[in-house]
Length: 253
Image 1: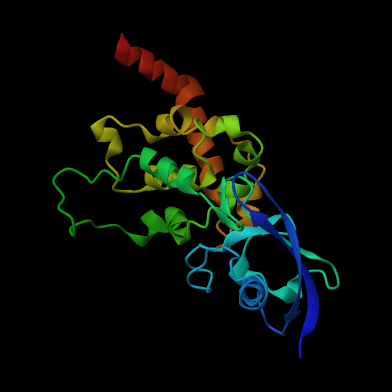
Image 2: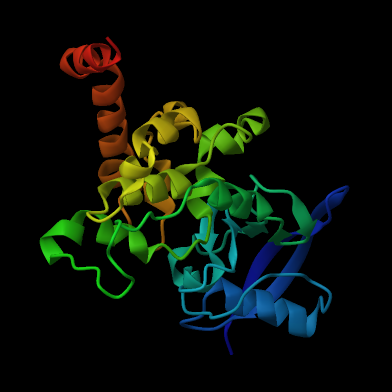
């Protein structure tokens, strides 16, 4: 027989909702998603929650636990304060569909705005060759499972709905940084400057590097330190370095 814990789960839709209290059994080794499933099975069969792999690799079960963006399947009950109510809410940054399920289509719209990898001219797919040393910096970013917890916690999006049209968020700025670091990306040869795009199209200037995105990443990607800050540095060089500006003026002359 396990312990009894008190859960407060947000129930509702995009128009109205409130917290509903559940007292539920918790057994050793369980994660929050286990308890949400138990609530579904025993008390609230209509409780909506999105999940898939239950292994921290699909990114589906993103929510907020005691106010912190987390994966339900990777948050062990033993890590939460004992004897205190456990509050589970949907991600605050995105519109609620129902209960713990949010509409994350904003992220897919932003993904489409990032222009894809441009293969080098004259090199066929399958013939790309890179050294490990060339990809070590950006390889970390490929661990992203697109749980969108970084998007959820980013205060530029979370607290300012009006920023969403102009700001892609940390996940997609990281994608731009990855492409800009890619040793074979030939975007510049096709007239696409990824650094300028980061600033002018994806809102890099909105990011003030608080590192909250890195703190919630379940894959422990150092989004701010390894992607966003280096990208900002390259943008500053491009726009404000006096030698680069002088070269640009010389080309135009």
